[in-house]
Length: 318
Image (cartoon, rainbow, N blue to C red; front, side, top):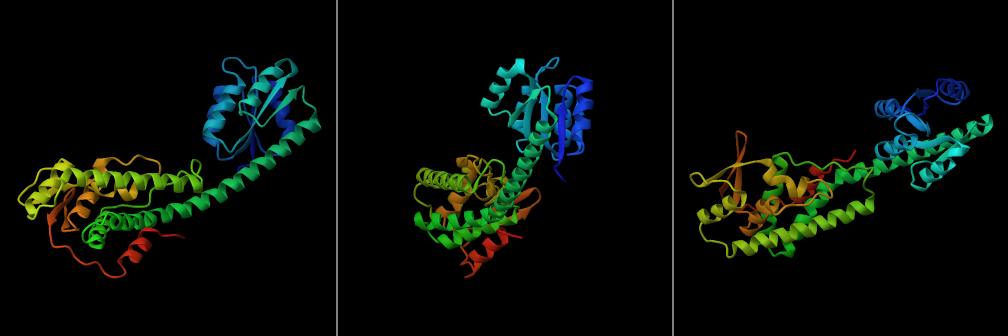
């Protein structure tokens, strides 16, 4: 959808008609006669609107309130305020608070008005191009995020000197992917690449702390399968049934891999991973209606290429 429209908001009907007649040769024009009507048009057609021009003094809400709404909810839209010379102080305040790109004094000078709007349209096009490049970059980062987290788990297991580390991580990753773990969505308007990597590093630190915390609370690994499963059952708050732990859902498994960037990782969300590392991957998941169950089993040596295959499966780029 092309972002090329100009939205003009003014409570004076003659001003709306005059603006549309003057500006329509430059770009398609939408008009609204109040802040509420302007907000509704902006929310309905925000993807098409490149420039918002609002009068300041209108009955009810003022123009700078609409511009503030646009800044918060439609940041790509270039915002401009038009006002009489007597209201210049309010225009300066709006500029200083970051609500507008420029103000246009009333009465308008035709050539100046068109020149300002051309510049605003050019700026909107540059913003759209920048945002598209940023979006594409972060979409690639999103696709790769799961693979990076799998790599972090391998490094975590090695650093903690977990028993049968490869088997434990392989069992965990296989279970998480089988129960629906997918690369978390990245809000490309919020994150840049550096901030995303910093957030991921903080998340990895949280995960290490939670795993260490669980290990400290569990102590020495029991020799028998029953007490091992009982330890996991207590951590997840699920009852054991006949040598198996039923009712384990995807939410209990996937958070370390699929949690949103910047979201805090809770200790309970790391419990299953910590338990697998603690017992050296000596468990299997069995599918059941509404989830799966965990049973004790001898750890299996993973295939030699499992890590590459898992990262490729979790990081589909293109």
